[in-house]
Image 1 (cartoon, rainbow, N blue to C red):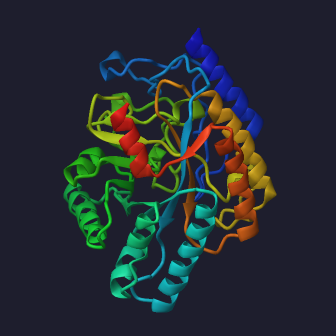
Image 2 (cartoon, helix red, strand yellow):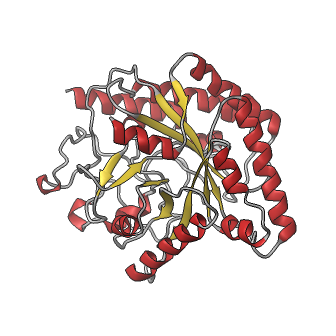
Image 3 (cartoon, helix red, strand yellow):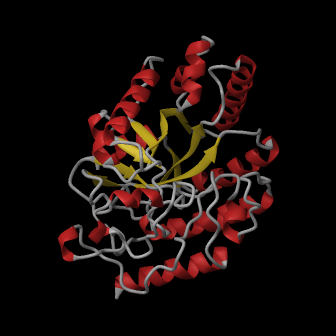
Length: 358
């Protein structure tokens, strides 16, 4: 019965916040699957041989008193930072400005770099090392594997090269995002030396053995279509777990690649919750997003437990400048929870260390 109560709570709050399933849209991170979750009890077993489980559940009775370790996951992607010096300089300045504002609140970014890495090398401005030294986290955003024609070897080689390129800047590279594939992306990450992954989306369920794909899985054509973060409900999105194979990665293991589930979009929380997106990925970051964030954090904190490491993060794809006034209002909101002792700013690398130490 406790399992059923948790599921009911999650569904009630999801309906309250969204009304219905949000649209899947490029850089956005909606919180529900593209078809309803089954109304059965949540599984507790980590043994895939017991049947087609729906989601991993590691704590069926959270006390709601845990501390939430929190960061903003920033994807540095989609720009010709290596070939366009002026563009790179603008992006570097924006990052420094955001970092300075975050530091004012004791807040920490986690920057996941793709094209920006080559820009730092090309234009001799090592922004990423500078920001790591200022207390922010650094990782790779691979954006690889979403085409089924991509081979296992191409994924293995590609993410290893990205890791080595980023390490050439002198930063510590321990985690990766954007490796979603029908191939064994878990093994690829482990073989390249990564300790953790973030931003795991529904498209990654393709790698599961067919009998292990959860209820709610659809034959996503591409990562954009299967872009909702997994797990699909908040009760299961705040506790990382280990995976050692892409064939059964939704089942917690004793060791392997640490999967740290995603939270909601930083600047499009309202659009995701109300299905008011225009399909282009350009949304206004305003007070309506902040209201959704307050509701979401109150909900998520219900599922924390004082006996485990609880994690959550905002997702943001670096692009057009954010409204700094609204961003500071959002930081002030998070600071309310920090001052109450419910949230602690922690980078993804720091979350990895916390999980190892528990």
